[in-house]
Length: 386
Image 1: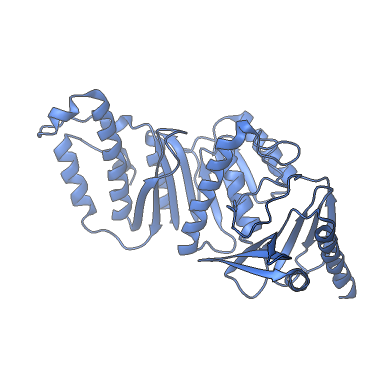
Image 2 (image 1 turned 180 degrees about the horizontal axis):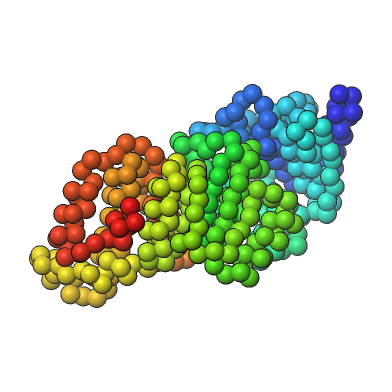
């Protein structure tokens, strides 16, 4: 215990010295391990209140955020109490070095010293600044992916992708506040590509939420799979792996969360069907391309006067395709939401469908038949799969 307390005290002294020398940039506490299961992580920044220095803590709970400001001596004592009890990871960022404290499963702490990942110091004004769930500093995968530079700064060419990653994780985080995952969730990402979002999801679940996820990325291109597996190993993400496989051939047993972003045309339907069959608690898809329904459309109603224009027929086919997907998921016991995923400046294919297990919509199949009849559609691919 004495050794443990000395290591914690050493970390707190480093924190105190950074504040006194003016080199403090920020502090993060993650990997919750205390009795309060709702407290996910803490971010701290230095501010000035009435001419005095203070640490401003943002406490992220499952359903809310709280900001608490404390004088430096009081704040240092709080950090010392949190470490090893409420949080098993602590990261201090300064222009000279990054200092990390990590606790093993047996609550034995170790200190790590790394080259600095940040140089610029944030504003000390009391106004709150936007906190990103995926921080660029000290991140093991963003630099190899070309999003951040050697000093942890987001590169100009990586700004759009970095915003997309954080928007995605923000959506996931809000969703999981209402529909929590088990402590050791099994997650499948169908069509993981280069893995930007897959890595960020693992990072958030493991380091921010303190879960022990197993995430499998499914991707056809062997080169991308090899890149992602090597990067996962280098990042120390033991529960993250990638397979070079067609999603048609992937046979999952049980899935807690299924993700398929921008899977082309009927690949989205295949992913949804596999999620439903495996009993996934949450299904998240962002459809791309909508050829299957459009080829069949033969509207005989007054809408034909509008749909004779190709671009309008294409957009209507997208709405019908995704609307029927939503209804079919509801028919199989999922409550659905359809909303914009990212801004249209990044991609026109920006719709996201989220399904969470709930009650069956007994009228859904009747509604699907009525829509198909109105637009002269013989079948929807997802129907056959289910």
